[in-house]
Image (tube, rainbow, N blue to C red; front, side, top):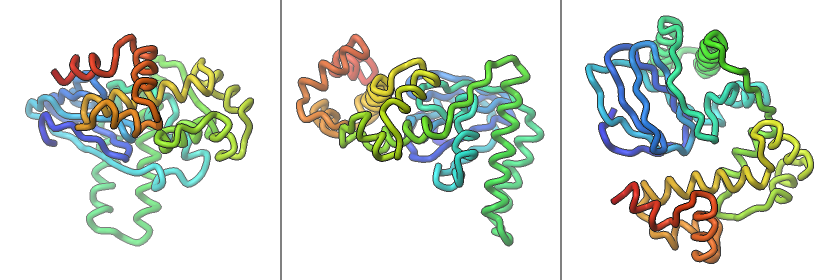
Length: 252
């Protein structure tokens, strides 16, 4: 762990604290982990460790391509908002012994690379995700199980910001219809498919403004806006702050 240095990885990150206290920030939200706590960080989210008090634990990183071999894997990784693009990060108390054991075995397999170790790694990650889901359900959380197509839509949007694709473009890319994407978006997020795009673009704009070294004009172009003025109006409509004011608020 490196204190105070923002990290942005295009990987899914899981942090388990096994001792001491970890204070960290994920996309401007502050979290504190004690022994037995887990937090999941979605690919692309900016995070850093603000303080570590005698902390011990594990950090697991993996890509979507590695874990998601079929629709069941896609649904598992996002089940109950574990790795969600809607800023649903939270500290989750888990069965520390179970999760720690699997993480330690993953570390061993990565070091030794025994026969079919990649299959074993996939299975162990799945066991960890199931354990976290069970912990959430046992504390009374409402079960949230989005369909794979909706999750693929979120990934497609996140991977194509610079193209400024429409809902129709994504429907064609995913082999479905605008009607179906709107139906799934309203079911799983309470928003239209277009509003989902706006939300993801806004979240990405915040990261680029706060943690990047890009100008507002460069951020606009990176997000598919040909007109920086239009981007500023869009951002203000979504956040009630102009990009300039938002950047100054967090960067100073």
